[in-house]
Image 1 (cartoon, rainbow, N blue to C red):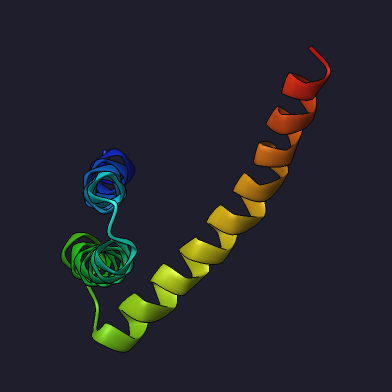
Image 2 (cartoon, one colour):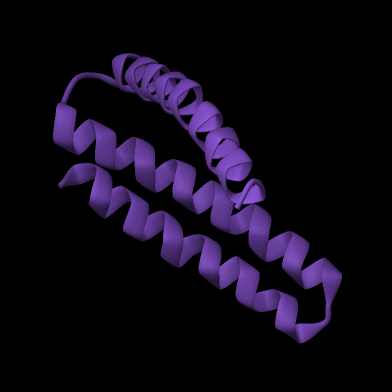
Length: 88
């Protein structure tokens, strides 16, 4: 449930930054994207701390570990999906 909640927040935050592309102002998109990335990082760390407990160093360590596992799992999955889609 926590992962779904965090992914939903990420979708909303990054959808807002992507929506600024429609303004045609590249500098606005750059600024909003940076702000949304920062907001997501802060939100994710605070959410990790509230859900899993512990101090900030432990929370940052856990988040980094989860991020590495997520990266290791998702990159091969994305490449596999791309290969599968290109062969169809």
